[in-house]
Length: 91
Image (spheres, rainbow, N blue to C red):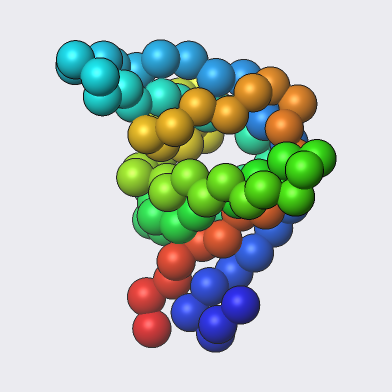
């Protein structure tokens, strides 16, 4: 990881559809812990399948609602999925 990124591990605890237009969907994902916030809303959620395949899901932004942080993404991840989160930081 570069000095411009911070990393953390977490588990997906909830997911909900934010919007759908044609084939394009946006999702909101909750994690059991996060470093994302309104001040640092962009980065990546990285999941690794049992087969070893790596799925990188860009975080497009966050919504803070009732003490929860929802990560806005373009690809869904299943509840219980372990992820590595990388937070893009401005230098």
